[in-house]
Amino acid sequence: MKKLLLNNQGKKQVVIALFGLLIGYLFLALSVHFFIKINSSNKKSGILGSDILLVQRKISNFSTLSLVNPNFTENEINVLKTTEGIASIQAVTNNSFPVSFETNDKIVPYLRSDIFLQSVPKNFLDLDKSNWSWNKNDKTVPIALPRDFVLMLNTFMVARNLPQLSDELIMDVKFKFTIGQGSQKEWFDANIVGFTNEFNAILIPETFMKYCNINHGDLTKMKVNQLIVKGISGEFGKLSSALENKGLEAKNNQMISARLKSILEKTLLITAVVAILTLVLSGLIMMQFLQLLLSRNTYEIKTLYLLGYSKKSITKVFLKYFVFLFGIMGLLGLLVFLCLIPFVENFIISSGFPLESSFTMEPYFAVIIAFSLFVMASFLTATQELKFLAK
Amino acid sequence: MDIILQNLLPEPLNDIQHPEWSFWSHGNANLIGQNIYISAKSGKGKSTFLQMIFGLRKDYGGNILFDGINIRDIPFDNWSAIRQAKLSMVFQDLRLFDQLTVWENIKLKNEIFQTFSEAEALYLAEHVGIKKQWNQITATLSMGQKQRVAILRALSQPYEYILLDEPFAHLDKNTASLCFEIIHDRCSVQRAGIILSGLENNELPDFTQNIII
Image 1: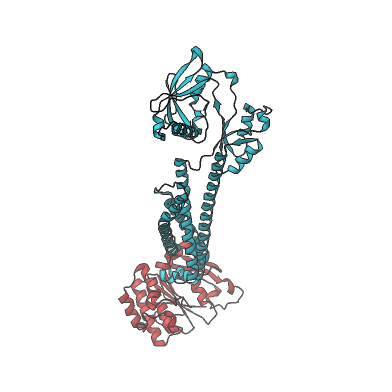
Image 2: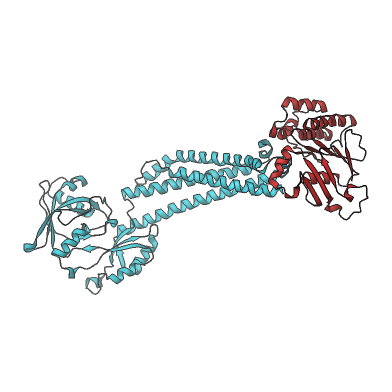
């Protein structure tokens, strides 16, 4: 029956349809693979930054002359929350208490400075949050140093003819906070748990900020002049316009990295859409090929019915053939994918993106899902067409 | 299988005045395992008669009952089981697959129930004179040879009735009787009936009923 039904086909059309199918499978596997790997590599390395921006009012001559209020009211924050392109927004809390920060370790020269502290909700932090908590009686406070501070510290070390400090060494250096003034002073050890690229001030947990502001600060002087904004992933354009319209600005490098991330996400999304469209198109060509094959075999199918063959047994012949074609093309697509992966990954890595070389299962699942959908579509097409041909 | 025909009349013959001796004037018959010869001149509805029983045509008035079941009520999917084990047919246009060899054409039917081994099928082919053409593409055969292939194919299944639509039209008398011999033998083994259509002069033996249409 196979010889009878499958010999009557246009070879040229099969080759075109199969080539389309191969390209579709390959595109799908590649786009799923890189979508997952680029996102996970970015999460770990943070090379493209996050969707988080630290924003403030645009600084102009008027703000310098105090003609523009740099602070945000609660009402303004609520309006911003509903603005298009903004996923979430939080006020950055500043210290309203006097605080100085000093080194308390022999490996670094003594350094003391009055500083500025900030705290933000935990979910906005771009560092390991496992040790990020402070309770009332703790004498040690976890802190995050801005990268610029580390740079400044090392510049200071060089100026004193001392060796520069690595991240690991800095995390071992003992620092101390002096909070408040006069007889109310309190001292806390600072434990550096990470470094932040997003913030310019030393970050402390919200609970510690609250404690110090209540016990050593002037709550009436607490103002919100910076906001932390999380944009909707891949929609940086909307966030950028929203900030522009509201007269807000963010650090330039944050803007660039957020823009890049958004562009990359969109590019990956477009690649995935193109892959799916290619696959759908090749699937449609295959379905058309199946219909053509069935109509070319009208006489054979009708005669087989007359000889006593059931619709099921005839469908089985076509379905087996198409399962074979879809399967072999899927395997071939995955094989080409496996061969191409090292080259494409090297190409991306050579551009400076730290891509992880780990195995991803998702492209295989995507190809299996596409294969299953094709088989289902073939079954439905064959059943419908045979029903029609038999009458 | 009992086949009962009740007031059977094909729609295209509705407007024609049929003589009293014609089956179409009443359309009633009980076919219970008998050998029936349908005789008529060309164009009188012999093929239509067989096609209606085989479930190919539904444009008729009256009823055809298989063991009491009106065949109009038999779902499309159930016909394959009937054509596999209860009814077999040699079509007037033969409906062979020209691109296949003689054996492949027969095998296509034979493999459903493995009725014959290849050797048995070859023996029958030898009997009707087409052994030499066994592996030949059917398209290259003469009409008479094709007719014999169609007969052998129809025999390669179990059945209760075999419908033969002018199966010997292209055969000489001698070959026709050789073919009828194996048809008759197979039907005797299976206790099956024959419904055979042909022109008016029936010289074949063992037909219990003649239906003139």
